[in-house]
Length: 132
Image (cartoon, rainbow, N blue to C red; front, side, top):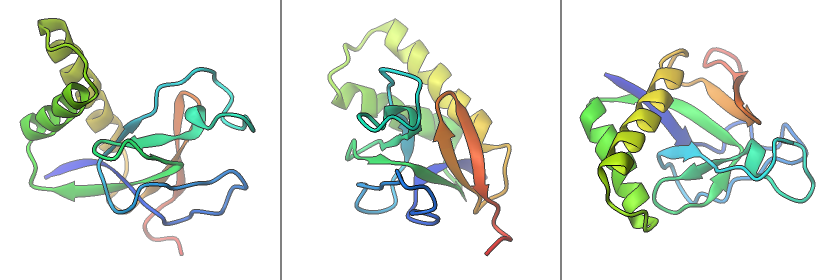
């Protein structure tokens, strides 16, 4: 079974600057950042995850598990980059695989149902599954 991040509305509102524009549950990536201040009142990039399909942002993600394979996950990540009009090159394929595998490595640290938040370069637990 493979663990990975998806968007969630769970724990939204615990921070004043929480937001979730992702309409449902969707695989998420880390948003590109233009700065490292997760509390910036101007831009939320340093506190956001972004949906693979909708490209909408959320400040919370949840660890889920499915029978998706690592290869299928990397393919989904790569397809997302192509949809963003990145040029299909061997380097892009390598970078996509490395970035996707890093997200899987990070997600594997916590149990299914853990809600996390992003604070700049850190992914932090906001709530473990056994907490209410």
